[in-house]
Amino acid sequence: MDNRKRKLDEPTRSRATWLLYVAVAILGFLFLSRMSSPGTHLPYDELKAKVRAGEIESVVVGATDVRAVPKGQKGKAAYVTGRGDTQELEKLLDDNRVTYSYDAGGSVWMAIVPWVVLFGGMVLFWGWLLRRVKPGAGMMSIGKSKAKLVGEKTGVTFADVAGVEEAVEELREIVDYLASPERFRRLGGRIPKGVLLVGPPGTGKTLLARAVAGEAKVPFFQLTGSDFVEMFVGVGAARVRDLFETAQAKAPCIIFIDELDAIGKARGVGVMAGHDEREQTLNQLLSEMDGFDAKKGLIIMAATNRPEILDPALLRPGRFDRQVVVDRPDIRGREAILLVHAREVKFGPDIDLRRLAALTPGFAGAELANVINEAALLAARHDKDAVSMEELSEAVERVMAGLQKKNRVLSDREKHIVAHHESGHALLAEVLPTTDRVHKVSIIPRGLGALGYTMQLPLEERYIVQRPELFDKITVLFGGRAAEQIMFGEISTGAADDLERATELARRMIVQYGMSQNLGPQAYARSREESRFLPGVVVQSNERVYSEQTAELVDGEVTALLNRLYERALDVLSHNRRYLEALAQTLLDAEVIEGEHLRTILDGAALPPEREAPAPSAPSPMH
Image: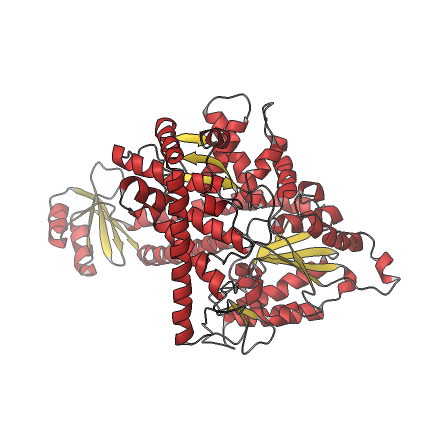
């Protein structure tokens, strides 16, 4: 009831405040108007001449000026002059029978009031400004927490979460504890104080936290790590204290800190170590997590996509002692996520969400939601009654490759180069044994720099890649450059990105995966290492852990591997040149070729005889 009354009083107080501002402004205007010139300023001698000429009806002698009213003006001052000798002025007025009076205090008051109005207006302005920064508070609110109390109904439950079933099962235990804590306490169990959600961006970490609060029907405080940190020293620590005081008063409840890495970075590694505002905030957070009583039902949840930089003290038992991984979904998870986001969209009869899930490998939940939204926007732009599979496919291409650049006009020669370039990629992807199938080939420019693209889709989810698959992947990357060399006898700048990706993959095969028979099964680069100062903390490192002599061998192995696989691409494309020409010509005519049509054009294309069935003892393509 008090909260309702407070909410009802807030608009009234706001209106009263604005009325006060308007009243002060009007008073200030009136006083300044009074202080301003009430008539024409005359020299003192001219005023005396008008008195002698009988043009003045009355005079008011002030502390600093003389105001004269001409005859026929009905008391309104028309002339103002400075004050001279009072005795002389009195004698002059008496001789000419002019009525006069004294106003000793009025001018002094009029001189003081404008300053009062000025300073009062400044005070009111600063009060209004501080209220805009923090409504209803002012400067004293700078140490208050910025957490948003969502309430007991977040509007999200586990029914709104899909594709992360393992994470949901982990978090159901939190919900059960908040709903019936006695079931755990009678066995001596203790619920974790903190739960850290770890995963790539867009996988639904914040959504999961809101679903836990929605299922448990408890208050939910939401804020980000950056909400604690300010330019003023000590503010972050004060906000942490205020947050925990407020949350404990409303327990059982959930505190959710998004982007925990903003304040949770490992301490002692900065230039201002020990004196940094962020580190003081982290110290206070660690202290508060140790101090509160978990039996009251206060649960702290946090999310980050950079767990490797967090301070180890945050991850020890008693703080964030449970880490839940929220990973990118597999094909079944993507289909479930699409079903959730499809509830509010009107679909046509040709929709196949299973196929759409197969078209989006590696997509996170946020990207899948974006695909559905883009498809709905496209259908509305075309004045359709429902979203069809055509819009969904176009939305996937928009997310993956960017918008179509319809205004980017290529010359005929450039179109021929791009068509043969993409045909080289597509032909190798279809002919080589371990590559992903081609879904679509296009020579319509998209995104920032892509003049064409070849979209491949995996037939199944893959978590381990063998050496022959890596060889085929690099060979496909060389397909565009090899096709240009075969068809035009020259190479272009269009293969720059392909060369960069092929070189990076070949170097990782040699340096990280140990796939060189000459160098042996050894990793020659350390991509992850343990912090020297904080044991247990893994940091990224580009440190090279081999000598200059070994570096020359590595460079030689990478060069030999790339040269051999490029020759392989040339051999396969030369063997299938007529298919390459036919595919390029069809692409020039249609601009876009779907996978099934492409396989019809390439029906009969095959590897050269010596590549078709290599002997089991044949040496690796690296040697």
